[in-house]
Picture 1 (cartoon, rainbow, N blue to C red):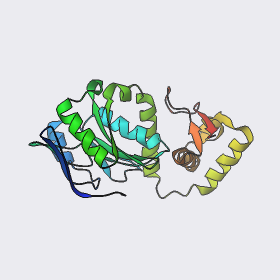
Picture 2 (cartoon, helix red, strand yellow; picture 1 turned 90 degrees about the vertical axis):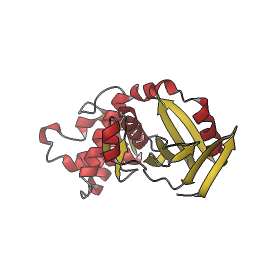
Picture 3 (cartoon, rainbow, N blue to C red; picture 1 turned 30 degrees about the vertical axis):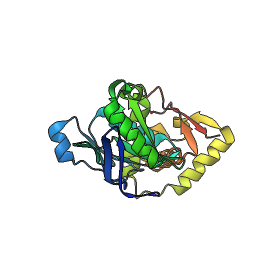
Length: 229
């Protein structure tokens, strides 16, 4: 990670925000979370370890980051902040278009000033944008996130499959028609035989070469596929 600093701190109105380092490394263990919260575990591509998420909204948020071609990497619970005597991690760190973000997910997008202001000021000094996002805004995009979770799980299970030739064929098809439905590319009468084609399609979508219309309906054979402009 670029712009990594050792011990950083900031005093604001006698409130100190500190972290031992700014190397984004997931802080919490599944064992701890399983005792305390609604815990989800999922391996992603932009975070190639087992991500641990202590709410459904955090899991969906990670899937939305995975769907965004401008996001290059993310880390759940990346640091341990200390504000006064309290210690806790923010929900997510990600890099988008070269800019770094630290995210908190909260009901209504509300975070008390005594924790929000120190974090904002601390992050500003480190050239990181601090944002509070409402759980509701993530849940509003639940279908898109669930579709991308399916794509990511398929790609993770197909890591050893070579789909290069299939990807070229899919691009050739879309150069001719520009837009079609998924069943025009992946034959639904031979799902097993078409598995490498499906993997190639999902890899092209993940790389940002093609777009799948996934915002409103479940991923399926009627999903619209088009070239990215």
